[in-house]
Amino acid sequence: MRGLRSLASLAVFGLVQAQDNIVFGPAFSLGPTKSWIREATTTLVLPEAPSPQEDRLALWPGMGTSGGDLIQALAVSFSDPAANCGASSGQWCTWASTLQGTQLGGKQVPASAGDKLVMHYKYNDSTGKYDQTVTINGEVVSSLSTSSGQAQGWGTAVEAQDNASKSTVAAHQYLDTTIILDAADLTFRDTLGLTDADSTGLTTSDNGKTWKVTTINIHEHSF
Image: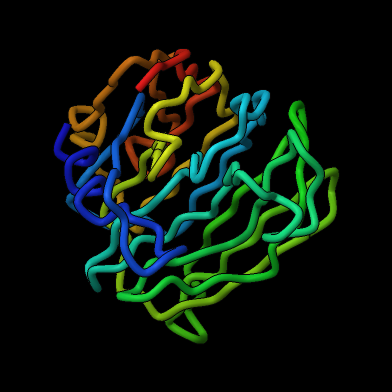
């Protein structure tokens, strides 16, 4: 649960200047590790957007870092998706993003229920930055690179702001999650936290450097 709490303490995506209501739902979390995370990838299968769509409901896998940043590719349901990313009613907006005091972001693009969003974070030794991409159907649709220190934990979130804090979020999945540490850490498995979620388990085939989860199931949740 330590990883979940540390991510939640950072997890206010900066889409407006102030929020009256911010609540969090189901989550899967790992960390902090005794090492640090070099690379992480997962595939978010988008559920149906809440109906009606109220501002603002976000699904994201995030990494809290030693620099105090939150690397968090986002899928967000807005009350007016067309005004935010050109999406139609019922669609999501998705983009690469890092919370770094202010919200930094790549291009925002529409995405639909059933789309598989591959969200990939990788430390770049040549730049000292994390390179972040969001891919749909094999095409990179949004990217971002940020100097963020070293990632300490990884977790998913369901975050509701404003009127979305009264909504119901459909069950959804993260598939083929892989987290690669800088050095082996077998105690990483002991940091696993689940809140209204379940998974196929956490496995490693190289003594704790590479960790895999085939399926993470995030349960339906009403705030």
